[in-house]
Amino acid sequence: MYRSVVNYLRGNVSIRVESPFPERVMNLCAAHEIPFWDVRWLDGVTFTMSTTRRGLRRLRQAVGAECVITVGRERGAPRLLQTFRRRYVLLGGLALFVLLLFGGNFFIWEFQVTGNTTVPDETILRALEEYGITIGSRGMNIDQEAMRNHVLLEVPELSWLVVNVKGCIAHVQVVERQRPPEMIRDEDISNVVASRAGLVTKVETLDGVAQVSKGSTVTQGQLLISGVVDSQRTGLRLVHGMGNVWARTWYDLSVMVPLTAQLHSETQRTTTRIALDFGKHRIKIYGKGSMLGADCDKIIYYSGVTLPGGLRLPITVVTEQTVRYTEMSVQRTAAEARSEGEALLLQLLQQQMTENGTVTQTRFAAAEKDGCLLVTLTAECHEQIGQQVLLPQQSE
Image (cartoon, rainbow, N blue to C red):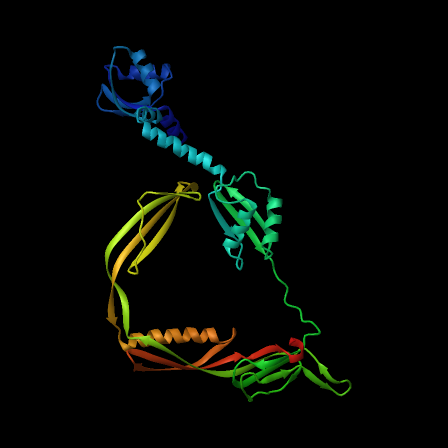
């Protein structure tokens, strides 16, 4: 591999040698330290081989008129540069490429944020931009300590942050702050009430007095665990009522699903426009556009220019594709509409249940009404219905 790279850089030539004494040509190459390789014999007096451009000149001087040397294919960097010598556009493009390759690595053209789960990337990048680190900023002059102090004050949900610049990509690594659980204050007096009606299956009292037991039927807002405790020694005592009350609950949900759906028919026309983004500046390679109508969809693709090996250039190719279509009405079957309605109702049921609730039984029904399909769901669930509320005198 190393030898091939060296031969390419200094250039190599394939030659055809005709001599009545071919062994003498080989000896002359060895005596004058002329490199040669890839020797192939054609007959007793003719052979081909490869040598360098300098070696070809020295070989012609050494053999003189004793043999006939025919030059074949010439390869390597010198030949390539000689080809581009009068092609000024290609030379300019090559110079621009080298400038972007090496000069662009001194600036930040892309951000990658990792380590965040609750804080959005936009919030972190906005805080960095207020400090002065944005697209097009120099990546070599970042004061990590000052930057960290500024961002942590702007985003209190973070406990640590660092920006590592590799090439033209800034890798932002953050650690989110772990908030301690909310402390219960002694002056907070509360009850546990039912968030919805149900049939109690289990009562777990942590503090306070349970007002219901297993098998009790409760309504929404009914007191489940009281924060008022009757003590024989001190009389009435106010505490922070806490606990979990599990119950069987029932839901009745319905949704209207149209039997006629508006779908996109075949595409009438597709328009593709391309632009180049250099940092925050966009170069449009198209004319002025127009407002999209209701019968158009726009899809934008962003593709970063990356060299082999993963080196990112400060260029992003933006491909904007506009598709114009026509709409058509399609009559759906009752089975298709019912399937869609059942999926929507199950999703709505999951949203209305408490976090640890489970669905134990479901029953669906469907009926056509005014060109739509009315899908109803009757579901039985098992969930925790206890909800803490402050006593009236504490909420004022």
